[in-house]
Image (cartoon, rainbow, N blue to C red; front, side, top):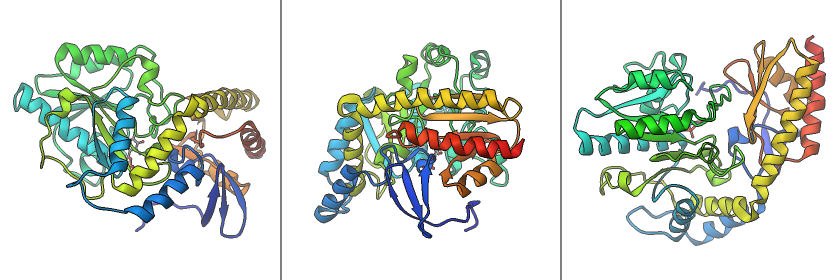
Length: 385
Ligand SMILES: Cc1ncc(COP(=O)(O)O)c(C=O)c1O
């Protein structure tokens, strides 16, 4: 259906940072399937895990235990705040699961009037109806009303506004630790800690949507680690499967206990094939911390080179910001023509929120890849001014 504004290119093959189009042209990929391919395209360990699992067992049902899902749940529990995991197939589904769990827990614990969830303006949580309602962007909601009842919005990074909007009906606060689709917006370092404090004081659940920021994207396995706070519930997807569709909703034992058999489910959620790919992805990511180190080193270099561009093009570039390899460059004009010009020169980049160039490459990126992009960006920017 006509749901995507696609570029006139057919991509056929990928390895590491590179993707080739059907005409044989080589491209460097700074989009990575929108922050999905954290280990690059077709990482050998992920490919082998998929090959092996596909010969053993593709799908059964969540009526039974399966080894790859057990292994994956264990890895996630050992490396996060969480005690329990629900597996699904996408980010939006993980958000739906989080909303359901928060409502169920709060109603049982605090009474049936506790159902409202506060989210941030300019946030992004997905396209299914409740996730879309949670998304604080009217332009994305327009035409799909009536939306799901029980959501309120406050400006991101404004603790006073959050304090004021909480009522006796509030059950949870849902935030991206760093807003991704909304334009790579970082909060003040103490904001999330204050939010945690407020949630504790008012007996509310704190939900972090780490669909985009999780799985090493910001230089730590999960972005909440930068801010010294833990949520009660967290959603992840994108990078989790190293390229295959899998999402997860993580929670503490206390909160997860609100779900009983029959309360929530997914036919494909956490099936053997995707879990095997996700296990290979996380194991590779965590091995010796090598890839996270590489992400942080390349982040510093990337930002430095973008700052140089900002100095060279002060009228065009307003700000460079980001964490790890979730980097945004705010322009004073719309960015789509720049994305197209870069594509013509073999560089896949993304633009979000109209005027923010977003760079979300695989975490295995090297200096030479960044240098190549800088040469192209310089040329494209020069052509504009
Ligand atoms: C923070 C966040 N939450 C949820 C989603 C929705 O994920 P999906 O497209 O897998 O449904 C996205 C997608 O960009 C996201 O960035």
